[in-house]
Length: 185
Length: 214
Image (tube, rainbow over all chains, first blue to last red; front, side, top):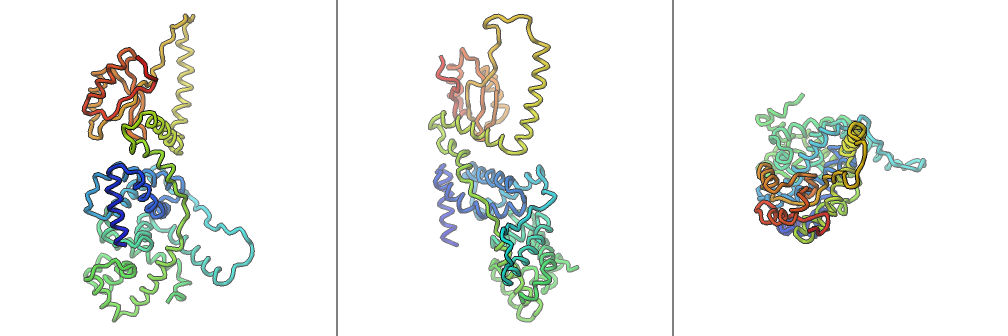
């Protein structure tokens, strides 16, 4: 992880000198993470692409202004979050969730796969029922592995707000998975 | 309903709140010690920790697949990377940038509405102002852009306005995705205006886009 941080610092220095190859490397490092973060906030793949591109454009154009007082990832995610909020103001969430089940076979699933599929469906529905801010906190914590102080900086809110959002989000997720939790203990 | 705001005065609540970041290894040593101490004596929080760890695993498994859009983004940044290395490429990228902007659903919708308005309004104006006869060469030249310019990032709108007025130039379009502006300058004095623009400290780039000209 430390080596990755050093690589990022080096990439940033090269980006400040408008090195496109360095920017491509940074883009490929961040694109999957930002895409996931944004799809949880925006729910529209087309809008995710737009916001992701705009975010990386800001990184490209303002790299020289990054002073290193926070982690690079915190800075990039904070830009993405602000862009996503603006996009959400223009394009509210679709009323109906798009179906997630892409299975084409009607063959019965094995028991283990069936259970896993059921858990994932329940989890997706529970995530969808959270507010965008709660989803952001859950995803930044569980998937991106960020600490609550970094998350507070990204979302531009107090650390207590991050903890509160996570507390209530966890409770909703647990409620949605109440039938499964016993198997996890 | 538990109140996480009061967690600071309740060790159980404080530890329970920190469990997600305990499970992901994101606590500082002091917080880590606090949660460790509490876990040693709280069966409820130990169960919750097991749930947290499973939740991390399951949430991570929900990863959506989104195609990489590097080539799309490259179209937008390439001209900047090659600043001052050829205005042809820059102008082409600006066109691509404008196209990219128009490809966006909300911009496209707005542009379509604008186009519809222009078509209708144009038809009305044309019917009102159509001259009774046409003479060869009497049609006014369209006020299209003949110069592309880029200004320093710290140039204010007032400075830009003053500069354009002083050179008899007007804004025909922009800013593009690369922050370039399309200008219309008097064709006969285009060369002189270009020289004055290029010598101005606020101007990063000024190039003709209607051929070499006079």
